[in-house]
Length: 363
Image 1 (cartoon, rainbow, N blue to C red):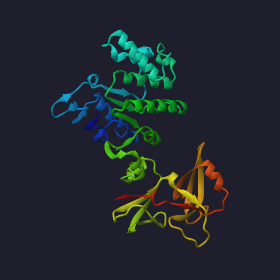
Image 2 (cartoon, rainbow, N blue to C red; image 1 turned 90 degrees about the vertical axis):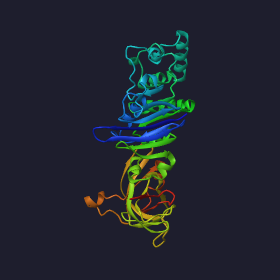
Image 3 (cartoon, rainbow, N blue to C red; image 1 turned 45 degrees about the vertical axis):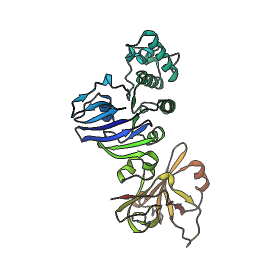
Image 4 (cartoon, helix red, strand yellow; image 1 turned 60 degrees about the horizontal axis):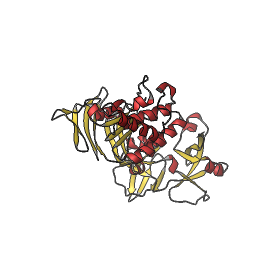
């Protein structure tokens, strides 16, 4: 089963103009706020009408502006999970789940509601009202309602953004369970990079209404096609670059030459590496050079419960003045266990920028 989308719609800030095909693997749609992600879902669901385009789902035409086809939302068999749940406050959980099932015989409707309640871990809560539920329970009720119509595609708009950390992990586990059993087109909109990576098997990166990248998530994260996509997928470390020969690149802002795993062309403009790919190695002593190993000094650090972010200056120590002290060449992320092993080592430390972890970006 496939969902084929080609839509264009003029918005106040830009024109949404997107084409892609989603199969039976969940697709994460990643982008900053205001990139057009929610509008894209609403166009697919039939809640908004594109200016131009065509949408088909398992061969059914849902939209074709040239042929003046616009199937109403209620007839598209598309389930949508809204960011803020959109449950009916005056209806119980069971009534919310079964809202779109009024055409079924009562016994069949009750059976489907009971099955969905069990599937989404809501058994025993069917007679409660939304105000009596936690945020995670409300989100699961909204998911059950979206699944009740047995949709041929599932659209989820920032489903975890309104939840605290504990509830987010619970609902994320529920979504992983749902996707594993669903195996139909499922589109998950988010601006959270890790969420998009964990829940989506493929990734579509959206920027001001245009597709900046589309494909396997591993490939996009390891080899982003542009500086914009690298930034949107969370990379913090970039240097202007120029090709030297073969697979040697000069990182102009980092003051060093580096070997990369791919052959570079004259069109290379930047080189980048993700913070968690930077490795710390033992010093080889003065005068001992090693490929892609650079001396560094710690400028400052910041801490989370499990990781440390280290802000590093390459080649020479900060001189202590305000402007120079603030200058940072690289950000590295390490687990606290590793940090404890080398934090007391004398400076300079040495970082290795692995050829397999570096990526080059075109102009």
